[in-house]
Length: 204
Image 1: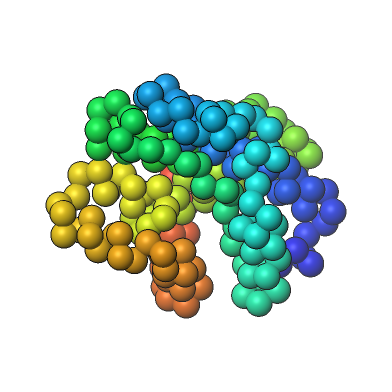
Image 2: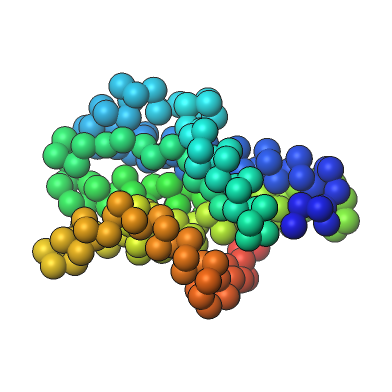
């Protein structure tokens, strides 16, 4: 995959990933802190420092491994800790913390689209902002998949009946493997691409 990209594009992608994941995780931590839970704040996660959000395996090794094996880099940042019992608004508070990350990616994509629309097609700036826009749409859509431990599952969990919650609790230790299997070995990747294209078409 990366072999077909020039060095400039690779650098843009790396910087875009760092900025996007950092803001995504910051927003989880910030909203949790604002809703009364100091867990993330005490862990140093209410920060724009990327080093506070990078997980050595999930953010660095995992994308290298999946790129070599599957040709697709899959990655994640370090999960933001939070204590649902300390949040305001009970289950709604948990849902707000969870959705804050993906929504930040949608906002970033929207801003990037606005900026790109003002730039000349073919320029480096246009290229950079379009990559940033598309990457954030991917993060927005992917993280809303309703399978634990992704954010979409935590939003659904807040409003789900007990049976669904119990099911989520049982599969969460294996959830990330289920997500990867769905994306890599089923038609789910095609569905995600269609959703991502639909979101991109909504942007300026």
